[in-house]
Image (cartoon, rainbow, N blue to C red; front, side):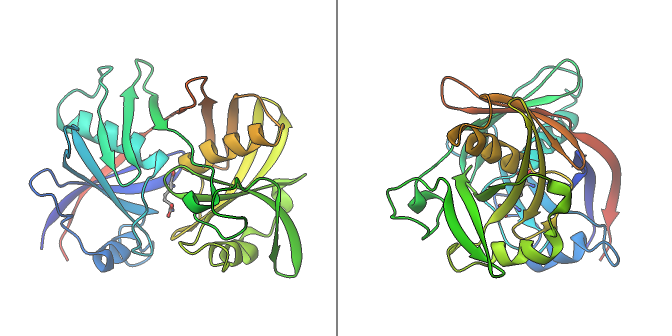
Length: 280
Ligand SMILES: N[C@@H](CCC[C@H](N)C(=O)O)C(=O)O
């Protein structure tokens, strides 16, 4: 088996991109994606992303496997990388092109900017417990400032879905959170039937948030675009931030806006690192 790939990252959240335009099924199995993502015995990445033919009138379809082989509905940093990958494939790398991308979370619209950044219309946040999903409140209620018991400690959490689930906790100092130890306990908590991504947020000012993340299916990553959007929504819902803020992650900063049209707009970089060929 010989497959060409290109490695990209969005603020250190890194992905292997595969040109899958010839078929509507990913050319790798979840087990193969696990092998590719292995940082010692494979290429190394937080996930593998496939550019497939568009569905329902869209330009392309994005599918993604996390590094544990599970398939998330959406990936914010990944869709910026996908947009740049497609533009490179189409020879439009330096233009301000935009694409309609079909994902399991709905249609997303990334647009390449003249300065090299990518802005993505990430759609509407979903706030009801049944939409997260979580059993923390009644299905039709929002999950804002709810208590959650993890590792014998009580946390106050707010949950937001950006198509994928996020559980957000505001803390005084993100650096002091033992993410490696508690991340898995949030991810696999019985209150989250589809597991959850977990963000810890320090509010520096109403327009500047610091974030660390434990991702479902990938563990600690240097950035998470859907997580940054969900965290801004949680910060607005709890009266902690403005509707537009910089979110600083270990890998760098994203600009996030929860616009008056209620949609989330995320702007950040997407960087090509190298091309390769898998000869497994
Ligand atoms: N890093 C991503 C999110 C990837 C999916 C996530 N691990 C999940 O399972 O939901 C982002 O930038 O949004």
